[in-house]
Structures are given as structure tokens and as C-alpha cells.
Length: 360
Length: 91
Image (cartoon, rainbow over all chains, first blue to last red; front, side, top):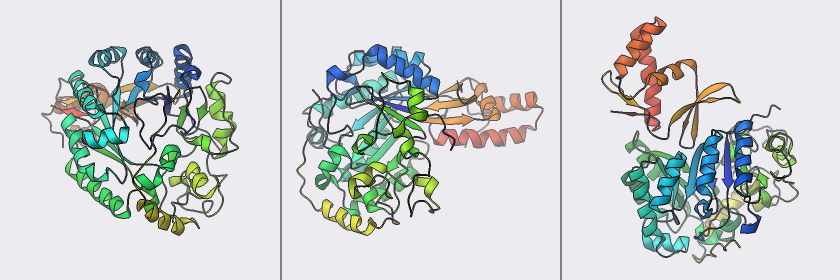
């Protein structure tokens, strides 16, 4: 099998975050501040990434703005030749810091939206006053002229706000909105009963997105992650394992996806111990589910096997205890019917959730 | 659809870059990368925020000794896709 270079890197600069969203994509075991890579180590990772073929760098977290050296990290990323995207809740950004990031060459900002009003957003984010701060940040972003993507994470409790989220993206001058139904890993899996959309909501979201895409063609691009528990085919997770994306955790652990640590038995390398190139091409975790050779039936003989690559390995692990199984959100999985029934039961669950913990 | 008088503009956050690892030119945009062929690169290289679409296609037709209609039709399709994806604007 020919292994092609990665095109995108997700750099999780820190797990620290002022918010505590119940669907946080960070692992349940959070990395402490004193274990985070320092400025020089990250700069080296960025240079290695560019040499390896990465073009797009996503600076994420946790909340990446909590890194005091963020401006220096942006400078290092741009010097390496990377297109540099900041994925932020906006909390902690001031107008002055945004101007510094502008001077440093930051290319783009992706701003997360926990809800379309303060009641919803501050309850989900667990941070009073956060929504108001975010609105200030959105205004400064517009004034400086950064290209903006709004990222709305949808679940049962806020899905009715989707039309307003799309309107807000247009009002803020965003070129793009990501409408992403919660993916159930880690914290979100723990809170599945509180977050699972109903089947009716999932269909409604499909309709809202289809209508808005037609109406806002050329104005707003809408990227949409559907509620896979309520659908018949799985998502093309990471564009295929070890094919396009590479993640680096705050402590330098190099991962094929942000949830890969939930798969027991995988061995991950650290960027401090091994060159990134070697980790990508030879690392055992990257090769574990690369391509199609690892696939069991029904994936192995499926005509869609290079469309969705059997779906999400971490989801197969979480739902049926076997990371090599067909993603049970797929209609061809023997577990599909049972999962759909369970999804309806989850969606009828209580709405209380456990907030994400703070990183030490 | 882009007209002869329209002035195409590459907005902030979109830029062409040589992809040295894959030995090709790409258009980098927010969270997206578009691989460019020679024609795509030639068209985008002409965009300076001052010249109109008609001026650009006339220039390309002269340089490549190709029929202007054909160049305009091809370019219109390519740029139209970029406009739809918000990688290009017109003024």
C-alpha cells in the first residue's frame, strides 16, 4: 500500500480551558500543564510537519488562547509555511491579542458556538458571561478582517437553535459554518443520554441544512456532520485512518485521531522520542487501520470500503468493544438495528450532564 | 456567474503556495486545500484585484494563442466554483 503524506495537523496545544462543555473532544484523562510541550518543541513539530507535507495547521486545545506563547507559535507555524487556523471559544482573547495574532500572520479563525443566546451557551459551556465575551470577540474578528468560520456543535438541547446559528454566521460575516452533530467519544459518550438528538431532530437538521445551503449559495458554505446514530452509513472518519490527518496531544503524543487513545493495545509515539516522519510512515498506531487490509467482513467486500473506510474505529470500540468491527452506525453492521433502537432510548434520557473537568 | 466587467479578487485568507512535498501548486483557503493544474494556476496568477475578468481572459488568450471564447468559458467555470466555495470574490 502506498502511504501518502498527511495534509493537516491538529495541534492540541493544551487541555486547559475556561469552558467545560459536556461533549469536549479531549480525552477523559486530561494532560496537566506541566507536561505540555514548550514553545521550541512545538516550533520543531511545525517544521517537521511542513517537511512531511502538512499544509494546514489547526491550533486547538483545550483553549489554545490559554497558551501565553500563542503569538510566537503562530509566527513559528507561518515561518514553517503552514496555513494557520486558530480553533477557539474566543474566551481569553482581547482586541489587543487579536491584533498581535494578525501581525503574526494568523490566516483564519474558527470560533465555536455553544448556543445562540447567553442562557444556552453559558449553561452548555459552564461559563457565565461567556456568550457576551464571544460576541465581542466575533466583532473584533470582523473589524480586523480575519476570515471566520463558525463552529456550531449540535445536540438534543440546542438543535432547535440551528436556524439562528446559521443567521448569526451570516451576520458575523463568516464565510463558512460547520454544523456538527456531537460525536460520541470521551466526555460526550459519558453524557450521551443528555446530548443524543432525537430521530426527528436529526431529520429536521438535514432539512434545515439543505434549505440553507440552497438559499445561501455563494454567501455561506455549510459543512455538516450528521447524527450518525440515526443514519444508515458511517462517517468517513479522518478521511481514512492515517491517510490525511495527524494529531499531536499537549504532551507530544502523536495520534491518528483525537480519540485514538480509547482503543486499547495501540502504541503511540511521542514527538520528543521519534521523528514525525517515522511516526507517520512506520508508527504502529498509524498502520493499525490504514488502508483496507485490516478490514473484516462485511467491510472487506463492501463497495463503499474506500468511501467511508468502515467508519470510525473508536466508535466501533466504544459501541461493540472491537475496534476492527464495522462501525455499528452502518446498515451492514449486525449491530445496526440494535444501535438505532438504543439511540432512540438515549434520546429519551434525562437532560442533566456532567461538565468536563479542569486540566491541572 | 462572473461577467467580463467583474473584477475578481482573492480575499484575505486565500493564497497560492507551492507544495514542495507533492511538487505542485495549491490554493490554500480556510481549512481547505485545492490542487491547481497549470491552467488554474495561470488564471489565478492574473488576478490582481484591478483587472476585470474580460481583461484577464483576453490576456491569457493572447499569451496562449487560444480562442478567447474558450478561455473565458473554462475560466468562468473554474472561478465560479471558487466563488461558490467562498475562495474568490468579485467587485
